[in-house]
Amino acid sequence: MTTLTEAGAAFALHRNPNPASDAVRAKALSDLKFGTVFTDHMARVTWTREGGWADRRVEPYGPLSLDPAAAVLHYAQEVFEGLKAYKHADGSIWLFRPDANAERFQASARRLALPELPSEDFLGSIEALVAVDRAWVPDADESSLYLRPFMFASEAFIGVRPAHVIDYLLIASPVGPYFTTGVKPVSIWVAQGFHRAGPGGTGAAKTGGNYASSLVPQSVAYQNGCQQVLFTDAATDTYLEELGGMNLFLVRKDGTVETPRLSGTILEGITRHSVLRLLEDQDVKVVERDISLAELREGAADGDVAEVFACGTAAVLTPVARLKGPSFDVTVGHETAGGGAGEGTAGEVTTRIRRELMDIQYGRAADPYGWMRRIG
Ligand SMILES: *Cc1c(COP(=O)(O)O)cnc(C)c1O
Image 1 (cartoon, rainbow, N blue to C red):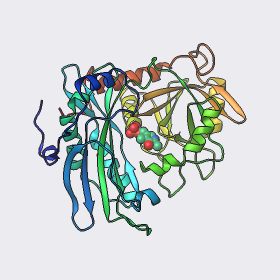
Image 2 (cartoon, rainbow, N blue to C red):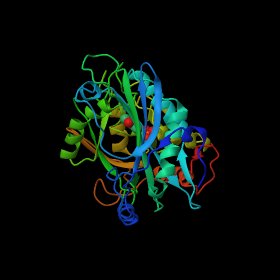
Image 3 (spheres, rainbow, N blue to C red):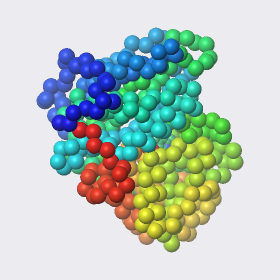
């Protein structure tokens, strides 16, 4: 057990008088799903216009008491983050690029007219929560403790203006491998008539509203036998942007890797950035540019696009085997996809980068970039 840094020690601990018993926790950790089980505590900081950030604490996990007029319930003034704590073979606990999450949290907050949480508080809250709930960090293969920092307008006021009272919270959920039966390629539905974000909107911020607007097209995707939805740009309906919560990559037959450029309507994934970095250092040609849906369809159909994958913290890298819309249905990677459409295995580049990234995260490989930060 490591001692807390000053930032972590700033959080006063109010212990849960009724934590889960060892047996209950062991049972929960033996059957991990995504985001259904939470640890015994949560971290919290409150901001007021007069006093700034204050009252740093770790308290029992539980329901919030919120005034029905709390602004977030009416105007969705909120932002969030997502990252994981990984247990290494020696029992130590690590985060992957948490400074990038802290910075993105601040950038999202600026766009939503929310106060910026200092990075020390972002990292300190994680350190303090993981220290008290350390027994909840799973050690099974590919499992981790998913961390969800978020802040919202808690002021009771239903006029439209930035709120004067804000709550920051951090909750944690032990999660297993995103794919319980190994990495399975997914089918994606290309949204028609729906957009996730528009020019000047909030697409580059990690905010709930972007997800709310993605739910209807996401259910259309399900109805069409697809697990994920892919959005095109709102201005021209021509260029690929991203999935509901993951960034998109293409691997050409000649080995070139392409991904949509950051247009202001795409969320800049930390996984996306890390994948680009790994590929560049392997002398793979990587191109960030506008990629049209027509190009992807043609490339997938004639085999010039050999692999497609999506990436994000939750699932790391997810191979895409099939692309569907009302008027088309193409399979990606003819050589590697065995079985029926939507089955098959991940492509070579997808598999390799996924493994390399996870080897760094789980401490099985060296970390030449200094991406990992030990917190316990
Ligand atoms: C969080 C998120 C991603 C992935 O970001 P990571 O930092 O890689 O987890 C991609 N798109 C959207 C819309 C997101 O909210």
